[in-house]
Image (cartoon, rainbow, N blue to C red; front, top):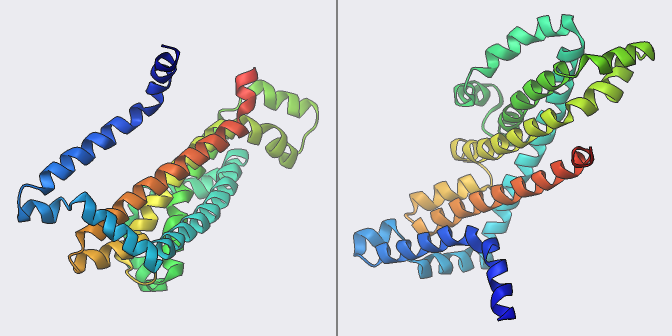
Length: 259
């Protein structure tokens, strides 16, 4: 009885696996309904064989590393740039008047609308991909940094004024820590946008390694098993990055749980 009760207590931890298992069962059933279905719903055995093929050839690791590299570089560049610009707009009314209209104008333009210009100006190589990812990360972090710092309670700013803080001290000692919850929310959004834009740029700029390029080549070769593996790799990697950043956010904002 004790073992049964322990098993029942642990059961809720595995609830997240129920839907994927159900999807896999339905998928396998659909793959056995004829050749037409087998092409669309590739049998799980064929997907497994394709996964082994990609692992043995090293293609999956190479393409995954390339995609992660673009995502991380773009996220770092866009993140620090967004933090700087958003902070500058928050502490300086002049900077807000100068930068704000231009920022809000370009923020409304979908990145897909900028891709033709970026390709014309910079080509379709690595730099263009990183630029797209940087822009995707830049927009949400600027907005969340600005809103977070402008939303700081007035009493904290008054204390900083009494202590005769200059603007640099005000930024690092008062505004930045107080706005950190909003900034971390922006970083979470930026990560999602960076990951999506990385794969999208790889699909549009089909040069060099990457999961998007792997998926496109597999589609042209009618290797639906490879396409599914690439899609699953994109989803699982994005999930792991989101979990990791969420844990980091909880660590950075751990002071909120002890107030």
